[in-house]
Image (cartoon, rainbow over all chains, first blue to last red; front, top):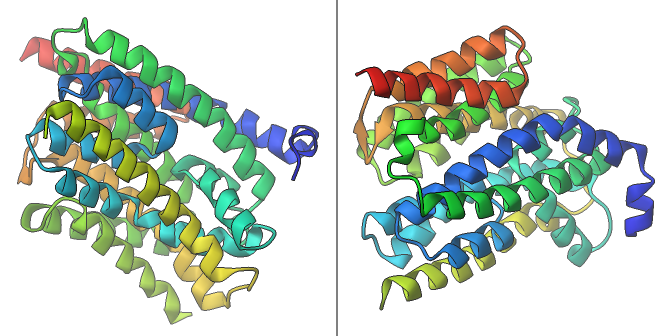
Length: 223
Length: 105
C-alpha cells in the first residue's frame, strides 16, 4: 500500500483518531521508560535508539530493568524475547487479515503493538489492517517523543518513583485489558492468566509466567 | 564489556529479535483463514496476556511478592476505567494516587 492510499483511507484515519487517547497515554509510558532507562544507567542515545528500533514497551522495560540490576546482555535479551513472544500469537491471529507475499506480510506485521492490535481487532476473528496502521503510526510518534522527554527528565529527576512513574505501564495495560473482556469466558481467562502469571512470576525467571498465562487461552478450543 | 557497550549490544539484539518475532506470525500463517476454534483461542489470548502483564507489574518486584502503593494506584486505574474515564486520565490518575501515597507514608 502506498503512503498516499494510506492517508486517504478512512479506516487508517479513524484508527489514528481512536488511538489518540492511547497515544497520549503511551507518551506518559514512554516518558516513564526514558526516566527508567537513565536511572538504570543506559546512555541517553541508546534509550532513544531502543524506542526507535524496538518499539515494544514491555520488552524495553524488561531489558532495561535487567541491565540496571547488573544482569548480562543475554539475560536482558532473553527476557525481552519472552515478553515479545506474545507478538507471535498476535501475529498468527492477524496474519490472515494482512496482505501480500512473505516480505510484505513481515513488514506489515511490524505495525503490531498491543494497543494497535487490540483496536484493530473486530472481535469476530478478523482485523482491520488500516486501523492497525493508523493507530500504530499515531502511537509510534508519541513513543519517540515521550522517550526523548523521559531521558532528558531522567537526568534531572532525583526519584522517579516518587512521581508514581512505575504504575503508568500497568495502568495502561489495564485499560487495554478492559476492552478485551467481552464475555464471561474472557473474564475467566483473564483471572486464570493473572493467577498463573503471579505464581510462576515468583517461581520462574521473568517472562516465563507471562508466556505460560497465554496457554490459558487454549480453553477456547472447547467450541 | 563496558556498560555502554552492553547497552548498545542489547539495543541491536532487541531490534533484530523483535523484528523477527513480529514477522513470524504473519509469514507463517500467510493468507489462510482459521477455523472457529483457532479463532476463539486467538481472541482469548489478549485477555490472558494483558491480565498477566498487569498483575505482575503491580504486585511482583524482582521475583518477589511486593504489595505497596502500586496496587492502590492500579486499583485507582480500575475505578477510573469503570467510571468511563479516558485512558490518559487513567494513567495520570494512577500515577498521581501512587505518588500521593508515597509522599504520605
